[in-house]
Length: 304
Length: 304
Image (tube, rainbow over all chains, first blue to last red; front, side, top):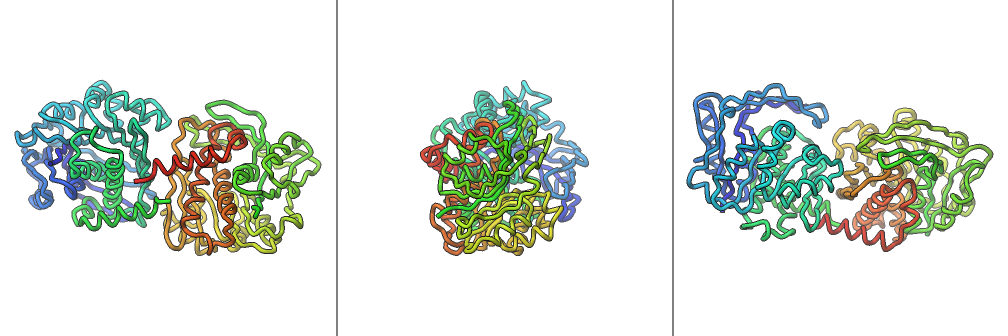
């Protein structure tokens, strides 16, 4: 089984209280794919410019990520730069240069179309829908979105979400999408829009899984130092979906609550690792033993 | 075994998006005592004015709270009023009238002095120290404080805390007291000030227990509606200490990590109930079955 991932592949400039990197590999698609690659084979759909470095392509290939769907076109790769506040709870965007991403028109290679699993990273909802519509046997499809689409293209977003089995968004977005301040009520409204399974991310406080039969709270890992939170939510998505794909869950009905709870913890594990170094640095060096050790740490600090 | 509690006994005026109550029984000492009374016998030290209603005294007595240490003096009872923001994450104080509380000079009745357990609610650190110094066989003593004392009387506060076995404060106060933004580091600094055991409350996100041998994260309960968060932190303290007193833990060394983890959950249970109605209304009507049922709910939404 393999996991189809769609999202931005980009270069990022990031400044945090721990340092500054002018240009490094980034983008939601990159973080999701790298995190998921520790669990399953990944097929990546995205677009980069002709400035995309051979070493970055090699990094993805080294993680057995299938790059047939990663188009390379003339022009520059998507570039984003931002700076984090002293406590890292806020971030200011310095520049967003869409470049080749502005004309991104995702087409699934023939070999990708029968993937039953897909995670649709945060892009224009019409593009998310376009990818979903090209899948010939979708069984377990979910995605992420953001306030920009909730406010700017609500009808398109609702049409996309209506096809999803699950959605993974942060708490402020869940409140905005649902119009409900209380998270239990927000999750109910979102479930009515389509996805049976709603995962609400709460940054350093962890994440909550809402299912028709109940909910599960995963606390955030207490890092000794957060070097760079960029990509933590996408790494969560990669761990969550990567684990479920590895388990061979072919539909949401087959996924037990136990599977989903473990997936929440693996998501949290990957999100926590992501913050420990700049960019994708910590994700690339991980072993499965590192991941399992941190999973056991989660058990140790939550059991009673 | 019984638990000695010191803190304000007051009248509160509270407005939340769910309604408004002009005057009702409140105060940290009241919330801590009522929450703890569901687990153990409580001895309350505080002061009220001659306007303190017979029915409020009766309410405390009905929970088997020993009121020998609750002085009644001429004048008015401490009055506080505040209004909560729409999402209830912020609160504005409208008035604080210390009244008889301004001259509070806690004296322990003879029958209170040999209590091995005490929780010192948030009052002037000199008064907290005065109470601790009157205890003849203190075994397990902790307390709460706030930014007002951290900023205004730091030397007195440090002298008080140095005698404590544990401290229970919220996250912003832990950061201010320690000068550390990262909570793991903040807890380490605070442990160096005296208390082996540090409990950091995070409001709706739950609480973290830090011990020399490791930490434990208790998530916040997801309420369907928060009517009035006043007293939730104090109710947590009451549940936490009440459970440990009930278990007959006579020193921190005897308290296993398992005991303390359960105490964290009972604290969270009492804090969650507190928010479900205005003032102390929900705490007074609880049964032990209600408490155990919610404890099991915590197990259900955290196990993986």
